[in-house]
Image (cartoon, rainbow, N blue to C red):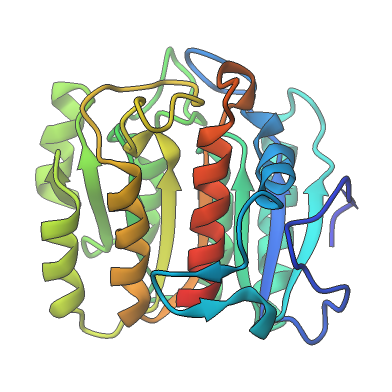
Length: 283
């Protein structure tokens, strides 16, 4: 495992990696963000505010105390070195998956997801990705930079192939991105729960990785993010989405783009922490 540091843990985390089914790990990287930086602090704040939540989920009638999960802390990433940071994230994801565990990555910017997906595809060649976001993230490059949080799903889709990328809640992007999506992804523009229920109902069995950019949620509910986009889903809807996906063969997930410094209330980090809780109980 690449070097990590533990500065607090998610509520109820076990001290035993070996017996834990789920592994939480932070990827505090925000080197390619296009508007507001600071999501490198997301993982620590998600952990910090988690103690304000109950371990019991009223939605699922389950409790975290009945599940083993381990918080590895945050990866130590070299500031400004995108390639080496992605390499360390991929190595960490690969090790967790090879140990037969379910990784939950906390971002950090959305580009971290590409490194995790690369590791997941090595383990699960027929992997599908369910992507929740305000933005398409399907650009070829952003201001000449290929490795960017604005390009992450373009290269994920090429890695996955066969239209194995499903995109929900998208409401922002360039004309070229939406043209690309019509040919190469399954995009549901400005919709979430209805299309998700249909996809889950008709699922054919491929293992699933979930990537949630917190800005899929309307900034009224989640203002703490780098590129807020009005017109999104509610906090209640994204929580329900996790429970809908409990029927799928989910093998890993990430929650990214939480930017605590612009949200004095920390309701964005609290929502992310609640999604982590629901995911552990659902999957």
